[in-house]
Length: 395
Image 1 (spheres, rainbow, N blue to C red):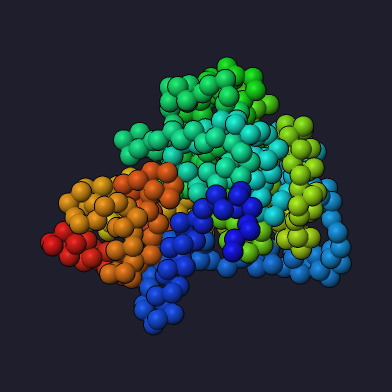
Image 2 (cartoon, rainbow, N blue to C red; image 1 turned 120 degrees about the vertical axis):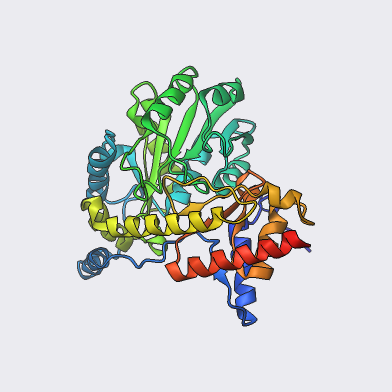
């Protein structure tokens, strides 16, 4: 008998989690599975950050903390926004949360009423869709593609907007495509955004540090839309701190206050020890973790080259994050498989390589591989996938 609330029954399990679960089940059977499905850096948290956490424990930062986050951490985040992004957010415009996922959930629940429309450019991170659903919002999916570098255009945005539009959520660098918006492209979107006063935009910059262009761009830098933009970031990806669960936002004061209010009823403040670690991570120059970015770049080049050599794979070289997102519809059309989900499962079962289908991110016909893995694993995975696809197309 199922007495679970309707809102839970309507929620989907993220395909990223589902594929990882299938990979673990195969491993439990003794299979040699290479998992390229989860977006988790394979580096360990740097020692200087762990030392700051240890110091926090020794100084007895083990009690309840302010819901918004410690004042000195929010001061550090304020300086980081100015130093790295050219953004002016005072400490009272910043809310620290238990991961960027909670930050985004706070924003959606604070702004979206039942029936409000939320524009989500595809491909999108899986939780944008489900969190919008939980808040009672209506998802308006705007599909991008390989040809336009997986970026929403001003024309697409204007055409998607109605009197019910309340929010847009997007990421740059993008998960799953690795695409990055230039400042010029963001400024062009800003010209459309500022036309509607009661319209707000979540700019998710969680992959900010994993950037291969040497250029940084933020929507909130444009003064025309500063009061309409909520900038989201966190420590999981750029600092290899997935387990520390620490995210944060910079936002107009009234939105920050709303997020503070809702968070006070859910989790209160983020872990005190994680906050002390974040002080060290964000207080230092990003150059401290550049070694990870350099390694990811080498892996990107290797995996993209090898996958592009497979018949039916079209890989756009990503400018950020740690994923490749090849177009694979030609393989599907010329095989017995019906869609990208079946292709991802076929590759997992026959090549023992875990990936995620593009449909999980709102864009069928693609497949995502993470290159947050050792070079030898990536080489072996690409070799297995090539043999698997050749066998599939030979049937």
